[in-house]
Length: 232
Ligand SMILES: Nc1ncnc2c1ncn2[C@@H]1O[C@H](COP(=O)(O)OP(=O)(O)OP(=O)(O)O)[C@@H](O)[C@H]1O
Ligand SMILES: [Mg+2]
Image (cartoon, rainbow, N blue to C red):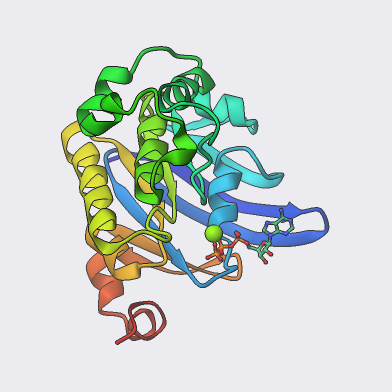
């Protein structure tokens, strides 16, 4: 399988503070890849850099072509980003949040697909997003990302603050999107055991560098990964 997303020696900084020091990684077509690492390692920054929200050097390729370094350009190229903290608009209705997801990528429609994966959202279409439960808001954020018909989904800590049952449900939907539609996913997740279950490969970031990479099985069997991220 060829690389859908490829980062080559990517450096990124916030003002004078360098955060990524030469990150290289790839996600193949139809693949789910996990990005693990301690707090502050640069996981969110990596996703934000891919999305064109952080100044960077180095190359980022999507299906072999350099992607623009603006959020609009990246969205139009087929990358949808579900940020840490979800990024839904609390004052807007569920329907308008979904509509914005399509609009961001210069598309319209997509409701049928979003509702196929999240049928309850259709009944709640008029509800103000801010009044949804935390789990429902995370589902809305994912549904909103689907509205743009992405080729690649960037997911930042989807399990944050959610009950285990909701987290399982959410990851089941991610797995279905991958298996049924071939959607490629790069997922950042504190819950490493969960991430390694859904992903086939993973990268471990340490202070802005890739410290380890391998198949999920290889990383599960790695003593450092077990001690630091799996807790046994
Ligand atoms: N807007 C910003 N301005 C300055 N520094 C920032 C900014 N955002 C992040 N950083 C710094 O960049 C480093 C990496 O942060 P990042 O959010 O990418 O880490 P992370 O791996 O996602 O951590 P966490 O697991 O806690 O979410 C941290 O030292 C952080 O303080
Ligand atoms: Mg983060």
